[in-house]
Length: 215
Image 1: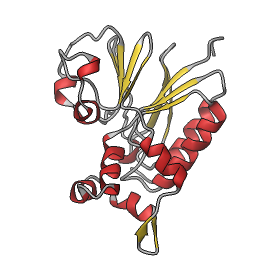
Image 2 (image 1 turned 45 degrees about the vertical axis):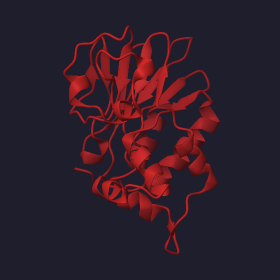
Image 3 (image 1 turned 180 degrees about the vertical axis):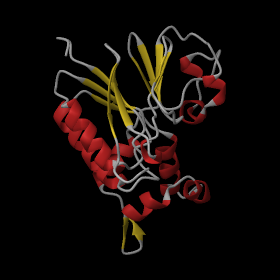
């Protein structure tokens, strides 16, 4: 590890709590590191609530953590506000709703509500732009819509636009990490039988872990 610490980006977790814990054990993050989680912590996988508990524990331990909003967190927030339940259920949200159900009522711990409400839409450093899904080509970062940041796919992936920084993203599952000069994609389909991936952006070293029984 360099003296300045690592800049670690972590791809889509989707309720794969055991994969997350295994990955964190391999990373052994410390207070010298900076960690950016790319969103989609919940839905589809077996233990979304456990994932959030662990992420909160990581933030207490590592301190310099940034948590981005994914489209799945946006859908959960919509449901909590009484909107778009059919869309959420169609995108694997039932497992998360059941995880937070108590006596027939949806009850999130206050710490989890604060976590979801505090998620960032993007995070920029001097060399990188972190975002869940990607960026709309030919559109300045300041003018990107939430829908672009959380949902875009084909228009971003097909573009060779240069935003002046490397864009680090998740959202689109890939068999292996995408490591290009202008783009780094880290959703390697942990919930679909792939792996959960972390990358140190200073060195582009990778760490990976697999959720048991997801193949």
